[in-house]
Amino acid sequence: MIAVPVIWLVIVVVVDVAAPPEIHLGPLLVAAPALTASFAGAWTTGLIAFLAVAAQAVIALLRDRDELFSANHQAQIAALVLVGASLVAYCVVRERRERVLSQVRHVSEVAQRLVLRPLPQRIGSLQVASMYLAAEAEARIGGDLYAAARTDHSTRLIIGDVRGKGITAIGDAALALGAFRAAVHQRTSLIGTASFLDESVSWNLGDPVGAEQAQEIFITASFLDIPDEDRPAAMVVCGHPPPLLLRKGHVSEVAPHKPAPPLGVGLLARAEYHAETFELGAGDVLLLFTDGVTEARDRYGNFYPLADRVVAWAGSGPEELLQRISHDLSRHVGGALGDDAALVALQRVPS
Image (tube, helix red, strand yellow):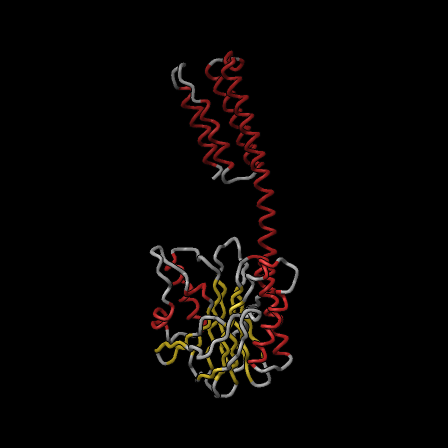
């Protein structure tokens, strides 16, 4: 890339010297440092600016030695020095801001990894895959969450979505995940786990962060308990999209009969939790997701038809299934998502 502005300087010098005396192309030399500043740093930009000034002096010397001290060439050299210094200052400020942005991005990614730990590929009798899709590449932090923990004879999972984005959302997600792990560690039931998290989130609403902000905090979530043995799995849904079950080439929604309200609205609605059971046989795949997937829109405003799309991939394993969904979702929205999204796929491994 550095060759382009250098070649430009050479072309301007050659053409200007060969042109008639009334034609002056010296002002075009400023394009070289301006172009360099778009892709290079301060030192390189300063070097090209110096070469531009030198090129202007060469033009004056080759045309007529006396022209070097003419008002016209002196003004052009002064303009090149001023523009070059301004471009160098711009590069210095830009590099400083890029370093700050890089540090902020690194902190956000570390926070995301600490809070949202990748799920292991094998948990108990389950083969598992997880994926987090950020709405923007520069902001890889949000409120979508998932986690898994072992009980004595089962695997317990949570997938949820905190209202909002940024540091506040990740803080609420960290609270929910910590409460989930604490509840499983205390050997609570599935209903007890949901109730414990609801109390934890509602208790957080009492923090002095402003009444209007507190009223906006809630978390949609689904809790699952999948036994190691071939027994029915249990599920509690709190205002969250129900999972999809992929079995023998068919896709069905595991819809709850009595869903509970989202976590954190206990002050507004009394939550009654019901653990509903469903069969998850060997080879079956269960797909958990947040509404960032199903509410993703294409350029015509159409939602992403997740259930219809996964029919073609019903025979895929968890990892392959999530990769296919990710690529297809990216094509559907034409690039970046409008909201963060999380997916978890799990498959009971045959004994």
